[in-house]
Length: 168
Ligand SMILES: Cc1cc2nc3c(=O)[nH]c(=O)nc-3n(C[C@H](O)[C@H](O)[C@H](O)COP(=O)(O)O)c2cc1C
Figure 1 (spheres, rainbow, N blue to C red):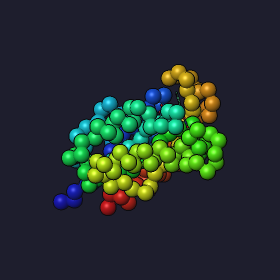
Figure 2: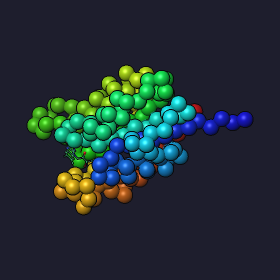
Figure 3: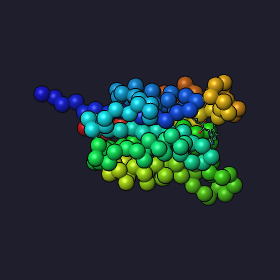
Figure 4: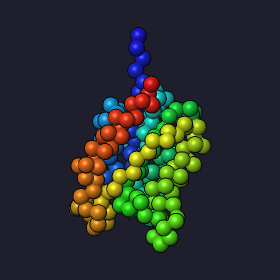
């Protein structure tokens, strides 16, 4: 009997950008995709892809909460892959000093610190995609309109496909 390894993509999203990225990663990977509000029992998955958006240079509160709430006993030893969406992933968190870590790097570091405590084995593969900044939950955004673009969503799909190797 062939035992198929299972993977899941989890996202925390306010305006839908992170959700779109998650759906595309899941499509490329052939994984289930769920909101951070509906996480199933993670015991049965081998690979867990976790994503969130960024607010004021930090993980969104909902993102941080679901990473923190993961049950160690269910996820210990499993592989994890991180992704984010943010309107300025390559900027320093507070603007200014170009030598500061970028928003992307700072976010991944924050995430990694939480996830490593859960005993997750964090893969080096990670993805940061630009997402339009929306003051309200609807509309096309105040800046970085149109992101994630179709091209960026294809990048997410290819990223998902590239993760299949982690399931071998
Ligand atoms: C109040 C607020 C603050 C934000 N702060 C930042 C920030 O500091 N840096 C950044 O790159 N993006 C920031 N963003 C942009 C979001 O991270 C980006 O739009 C993201 O794609 C939203 O994802 P979602 O549509 O899944 O909610 C902020 C967005 C909002 C609404």
